[in-house]
Amino acid sequence: MSRDRSRNNHNRKSKRVVLVAYEGENKTEKNYLSNFSGRDKDYIIKPVPGNETDPVNLVKQTVQKVQDLSLDLLEDDKAYCIFDADMKPEKNIQIEAAIKLAKYNNIIPIVSAPCVELWFLLHYEYTTAMISSNDVIERLKRHYPKYEKNCNIYLDIKDKINTAIENSKKLEKYQKQNSKKLQTVEANPYTEMYKIVEELMK
Image (cartoon, rainbow, N blue to C red; front, side, top):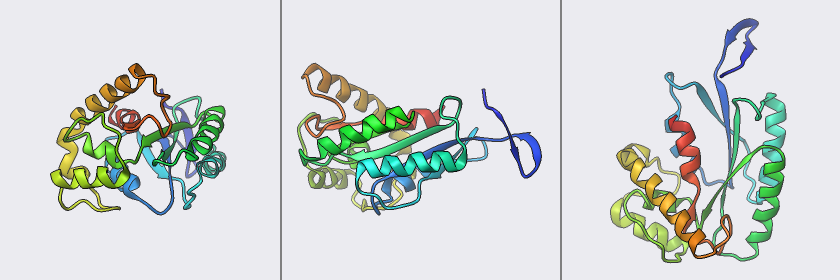
């Protein structure tokens, strides 16, 4: 149940906030998730400003924004940090520290290995083969030739969202069965984007 918040000096029920932080200057995820906003929703999506590429600093930035907005993450507000694991083993240390800090502050980490484009690819096909970011994008372009970074792909693939969710969950089960630690470079391919999408589809 949403809380009553005071806005513009009028007591009225306002929308809950879904705060989302993205890595670097790539706004692919921001453009995609912005499509879930609307008057018929009980939430508003707010991005965390900045271009942090280090996962820990991204979480710290999100913690500060949560405080600035006086959000209550134990009630109906949500905060997410979206990371790409890439294929660099050294990033495991950064992501592990970021996830620990995020969970301590009730922020939900969303990890894709190797990259968020895997989520888009899973709208079209299911794969369990380890894959690089470049190969993910190359395979995605076979289905969606006009794809490029920062484009808004949502309207063209929204009818396949349930397929992507199903494929993501199946892939998560596959990685667990093969003793891969989720949210790491080694759990490739893998994406948790379905978690935030399901929340926004409620």
